[in-house]
Amino acid sequence: MARRLFPRAWINKSFYFQARISFVRVKYLFLTWLTVFVGGWVVYVQYSNYTELCRGHECKNAIVYTGGWGDVDGVIRCRVGEVLHYELGEEPEPRREAAVFDKPTRGTSVKKFREMVFNHFKSKLGEQANLASLVTKILTVADGNKDGHVSLPEARSAWALLQLDEVLLGLLLQDRGHTPRLLGFCGDLYVTERVPYGPLYGLSLPWPLEAWVPSQARRSMDQWFTPSWPRKAKISMGLLELVEDIFHGNYGSFLMCDLSADHFGYTDRHDLRLTDPRAIVSEDAFRRTMRALHCEKDDDCVLGPDCRTSCNMAQRRCREEVTQPNLAKACGALRDYLLRGAPSELREELERQLYACMALRGSAGQMDMEHSLILNNLKALLWRQISHTKDS
Image 1 (cartoon, rainbow, N blue to C red):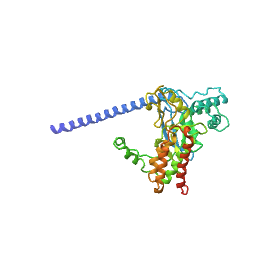
Image 2: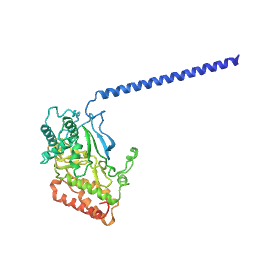
Image 3: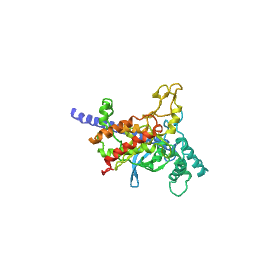
Image 4: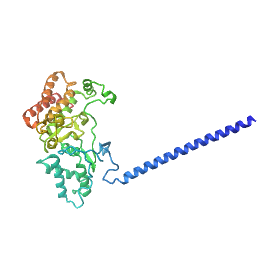
């Protein structure tokens, strides 16, 4: 009797077990289908409500992709969405970014659009003699199909692009080869030439180790894996030429407010490129920003890591003049970079010139002669060392 019952009991348990597995499978299949359905609905709602130009989906802060533009490697940049925005020259107060794809409005003439662009540049750069030529250059860029006319969609796309300060500054410096070339754009989504090597120097450490590495050791580690010294000298020449070109340039003077190595890279030919033009602001905009700042101490009068003025304690307002010119900040950024591996016969003179450069104080406009002398001496010293090499 027991022998007859055992197979039957085993069959019942087996059937129960299989039924249990089937139920679990159905349960997870249902949950998976429900997740896909809800997720798809959310995506549909997001996309159906988002109709702004060239923004398939809202990018938060900045999203960067690499791609190709013909036979040129490019970087696709997107900077849209509701982000905290600070308007230079006004009280630093967060505001929501306004939609920019509805301007110019239908019926706007090219003459009126030119006036819009001119006034926009004037608000960013101040009164400059060459603003009209800059507007003409931008209208040429805006003519995407090169038919000699700027259509309404082309004008709206260009206007959206020009709301990005980094694009405007990049275009100003592009002719001198300091920034990657703008290859194309659609609204505030744009493609620039890819810079193959970056940052300029520095070693990325896992975040748990960052706090434990002494600053002196970190400075030494940051110079590991840099190019040979003659190539570093050529790259450094590029930074010095950038400083020279933004000092009383064609569209006014500019200040370098963040000389972090992350903002710079270099090409296969070891030509320096400023990969993030947001590190630079116009001197006119900087002055307006400082005028608007209340202060209790000097540390309140800062824009970015490297642009600072002093506080007028009597008026509780920040002064407009920077305490350190671009050249002094650039020499500080290049000190360890150039001294490590420098030829022995050059090192003492190079160190002396770098420290003299770093000691500069006040704005460059107050010390034109000294500024130019130190800059030219340093460039000449580096050039003598590399002019006879293939790296030049």
